Length: 438
Image (cartoon, rainbow, N blue to C red):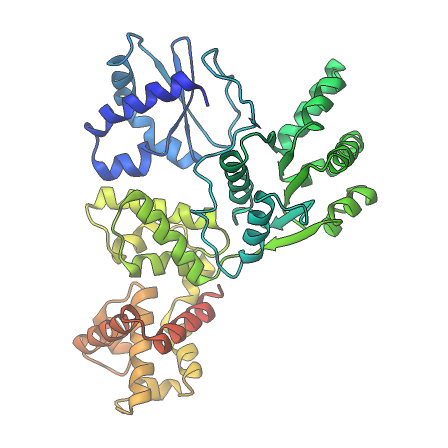
């Protein structure tokens, strides 16, 4: 990272923190990284496009804070991770052990391990600890499930524990673009010198070399040179090697010659843990029912999950409060129509009834059988959590119950969950999966 830009920004942050509400600062400003300060242009990088858009309104604060440190009227340029990388400035110090932008925020310590990614996590830790058994290591899975996090975590671990090692991290798209430039400039020697003389190559989204014949020939030779030198190769992909149909067979064979590990969609418990970790990082108190609501409705990727969390926090600034009703309002337009359709009494009540081996009529009856009462309270809890119905409306649906009865039922199940009643927790989790299809 550019040293002077980083130092200036760290000093500026101290001043900015005094001018902006704490929760706003921690959520939007603190995650920004100083990229460069070339001339009178100061470049800041946000973790994503949404974050970038949110902080545009604070450019004047940034400019004034920087001016109080150095007598320069900076033009603030805001970019985001994954956007085109700006040219580094002359204040940058060359990286000696790592080439590529390893994100220090991605470590093994803050990677949430669950059943969906435990094998991948263990394999990456083993590689980082200098294991030659998992070489090459091929991680595959859908977008936003943590593959890139693990690549960066390997780089950060090796940087800390084996600083003498030469590591290269490169997104495959960048690798391809560099090779195209190499062809244009006829600079093969420098390209090969760079990529064939490292101790560890971390390459993200290897699927980008599909259908690129010359690139595949070059990467095949690079792959062989690295393995012959005993270097580690860790690749991520959106599919397993055998599904890379536009890849040469000899490359597919090489990719499959080590360890192939998949990363799946995180289960409910892991999704909640990810959100809890995010809230802890931001030092924001978020009730469990909000985290649960987000986790049940955003299941396809960690990126989507964290985006929903950020949306709720942002919405809470406008509303001035942070509760379940705010979360529902904030996420209403982000939840797919099919999911909203699934969260109706007509869907929920039959599912709960079948789960507990009762009929819908029994759920709605006045029968006070203990097991039936629990099933009825779980129904009240789920209808409250997953719909915008009031206690009074839910009461009418469930056999004309008084709103206070519904409130009691909701609180009863909520307290059982908070108290660690595993029978209730398991039942609610199973039912949520069935209702939401997550």
